[in-house]
Length: 171
Image (tube, rainbow, N blue to C red):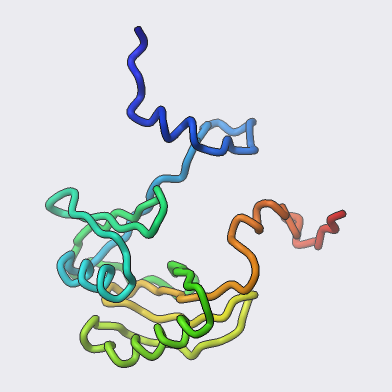
């Protein structure tokens, strides 16, 4: 009898990648990592402000996620945290423009409680209604509302531009 992989159920449910010519044959993107100053303060921010599910899995780290199998591993590195730029941000989708407005108001109101840094104005940009803010670990977050489509629509539609920036037409 063949031993069963602990990931067999996940693999059976995964959508096979469309790139069958790659070297690596992945069935899922499972995690990323994030450096944090302090696990305890970061956990409070993730759970109380962002509404993430958080678990402590090891002495130097914890994980968070939001409704998916993908999770982020947080590693406590203290003052060695490298600040990220706005371009390197995490996106959190909410259900309405009103929820974006409320999150923006709460970010200002609770800035000192959660050690939130810069908070940018709400804007309608790149197809979303959103705002960006810097957290206690110098990571950036975008709280956003997409009106009328889901993230999978990007992949279902396919490339809109070639790698030389030429617009592509679709039928």
